[in-house]
Image 1 (cartoon, rainbow over the protein chains, first blue to last red):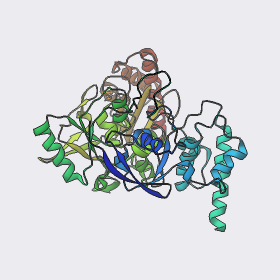
Image 2 (cartoon, chains in turn brown, yellow; image 1 turned 45 degrees about the vertical axis):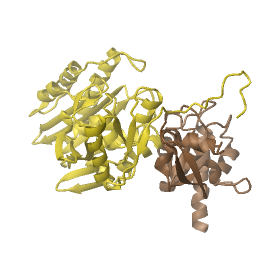
Image 3 (cartoon, rainbow over the protein chains, first blue to last red; image 1 turned 135 degrees about the horizontal axis):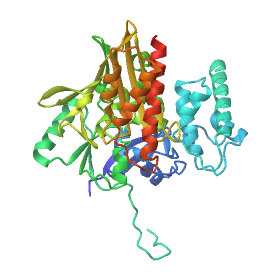
Image 4 (spheres, rainbow over the protein chains, first blue to last red; image 1 turned 120 degrees about the vertical axis):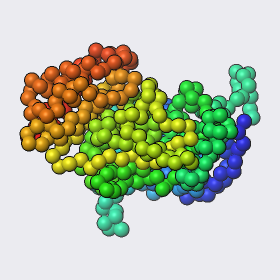
Amino acid sequence: MAEKKLIALEINGRRLEASVPPNQTLLESLRELGYFEVKSGCEKGDCGACAVLVDGEAIDSCLTLTWTVEGRRLTTVAGLGSGEHLHPLQTAFIEHGAIQCGYCTPGLIIAAQSMLDTTPNPNDEDIRLALSGNLCRCTGYTKVFAAVRDAAAVMREGKRSG
Amino acid sequence: MQPRRDGAPETRKTMLADFDLVIPANLTQALQILSEDATRNGHDAMPLAGGTNLLVDIRARRAAPKRLIALGKLDELRGTTIDNGRVIVGGRTTLTDVLRAPRMAEHAPSLVQSARVFGGQMVRNSATVAGNLCYGSPAADTVPPLLSLNAELTLASQAGRRVVPLNDFFLGYKQNVRRHDELVTEITWPLPPSNSANLFYKLARRKGDAITVVGLAVTLVVESGKCSCVRIALGAVAPVIKRALAAEAMLIDQALTPTLIDAAAGQAVEACEPIDDARASAEYRCHGVYVLTRRLLTQAWERLS
């Protein structure tokens, strides 16, 4: 067995240390630490359910070794907003009913947020490319697209007035 | 720990089999570790770039390295520049970096087209171009574009550097000339001239997040109404991605006509050695090569004449 190491992590603004073996994926670490909003789907980079932000950029946590994100800023979907103050993407997903079972939703919101960070005014092709690594098996993507378009508009407005 | 209700012992299964992980701070350290590994430990370490292939293979027990050398901190190899008439992409540059690089759509139209349909966003944010080349999948999306651009790789080790044309890089299915102690530090190609067209098409079941059925890239340079340079690269139709040299030879120094393009497309099919698999039959792949060669040559010629 390879040696575990104490790894310093910053998750949703909270700093903590965890004892992690070298072969542990970020997906496994996050769920062990209780971040159950990060979902385990295909575990091979196809479905996007486990997506989290690393320094603002979405990655599949199942394809990331925890040791390699030491000192980086990690954000899960629960770190984007709180129960009282939802993120515009979270509000828009609810308003559009862009959720059925909800399993893919955390990853979809993380992927959308990552795209909106660099593309605040996306067209449908931008959204399609950004969400191409997120699979929803309940329904389709029409309501998801509508939610992302709406949230983008709200976020642009927020930036202008804020 | 609570015993399971079915009485089976509680064993937490880990996704990945046991391995050790080393995270060098820079290229010098990384090359030193690889060099020591090659001489002392008998080649049991593997470089880990984006991990979007290797970690999937380790999880599926298709690969079992004892040690991974993670390249995530080699920022000196990340980014794109232009120098001396050549485009230079660093060995740690991700697909997303390529898409964000200014003017890359002019400097490598086919590569940008392939990067857009490469995996999904999260995979593009992690995966590197060099990793895509070194893994050597016959369906690798960046290879046909880079072959069509006549790209070269710089391989570095503690012993020095060497430059290898991408055309000579692959030896066989997932085999290439990279030595165990070497890393790809740069991928370069000449800036395309203004009288050139460079196109790529990925035929797959979906636009994104799909493994390529046929990937085809074409470069055409036209001078005085004739083709002065033709490159046709075929992906996912042979153990190694390669150029359709006989088809290219039919077109050089010629003004293209529908008849000639059709004949060259037929010739390109002759270069294919495809397999039947879950994604497509060999016959369908050959037909795909025929249709796409004809289509991309026609588009390129129309754009330039």
